[in-house]
Figure 1 (cartoon, rainbow, N blue to C red):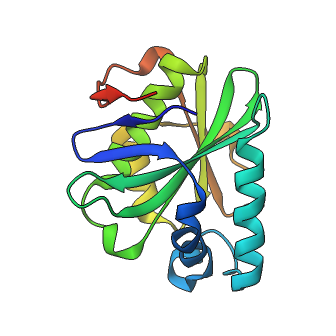
Figure 2: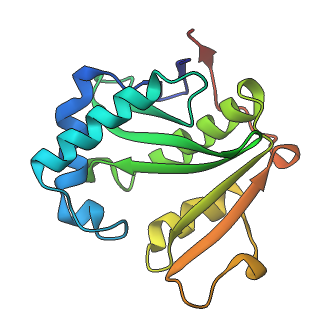
Figure 3: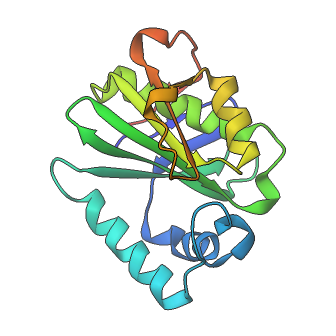
Length: 178
């Protein structure tokens, strides 16, 4: 999997060294409040092992990256693309609590979108998130995702938005590393 940098971040493949950070994300009730029930440590470790295994599939159906700050080399979260078909993927991001409020989701997710459009033959990226997750709603809107009312199910508490390759005009990636 390819790694790249932005002005403040290194986006690289998730590795074994990220296990404790990954587990802390999935076991933190506050982080998980808009995703689902927090996992036990054992369940989070099993999820991590499945994620690492999924990265080795060819072609992968899910790719997961670690988000690392360039200033101090701290791993602050993860983001992923999950293929829905050959040219469409769903995007997701989780950050440690101390990384909130610094405009890092926009930079991390925006650069992953740029990478997906330019290097992974993705033509559309979907974002599916809890309606009550106002922070995600804000940064998805800042990135330019489009709300599609007909895709919203009345029986769900989620929002569905999309972004097409031809909409992308930003340059967030400063360097591709591999």
